[in-house]
Image 1: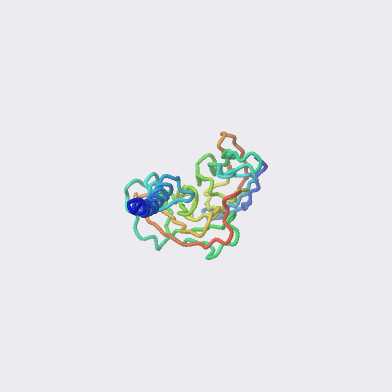
Image 2: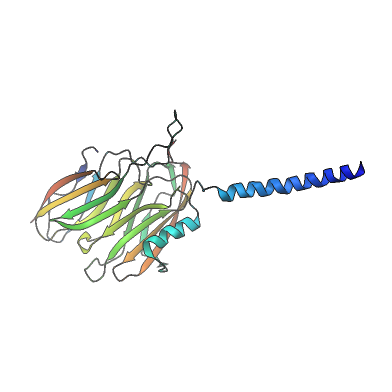
Length: 157
Length: 107
């Protein structure tokens, strides 16, 4: 009888740890509903390879501080560049680290663009960071980041 | 895909940088949504590429992902050395294309 009670206590403790382990396995085994840093890094790797982006203070990333509607968040950027055949911004990759997939868009420029600037509207599932990576004609890459607080997520039904 | 709307100046100075704004009606179905009745995923169907050419040469292009809002808006800049035709093309996941043209006079 004593033995049974003891084993009962043991079982309860074991049950707790097991439940914890199962919960953990459940989380890790699941595909995350939102991107994480690793997914952003992987997506970035696909675009720029293993080049390490430098400080992108010349990238003017214009985003609302608070977006009420995540379905249509205005995004605008401008990069200081002479935009000549010898020195121009080749492309700008935009990522969102809290969306189901981190890629937002890639914009390709040419010297005929005259100005490395563009604007569009994007969907944001929740409050998250927007990352802009600029690729220059000489192969150098620069990165800028800004947080947008989202009141109502734009991820559809 | 519906008829796109393009706003660009019809007359510019040589080498002047100007803005082109465009809008097209499109659901931009992200592939993340579920049909409320059947519970099945609604397949992705978005415009994944936008290209702007001037007299046949590319001036600007964009690759869009499902994070681009429905009825996508795009504004960009360009300059022209001579009069010509600006052609904008939207291409969706099925390869369907729609184009809009605008004549620009340099004077």
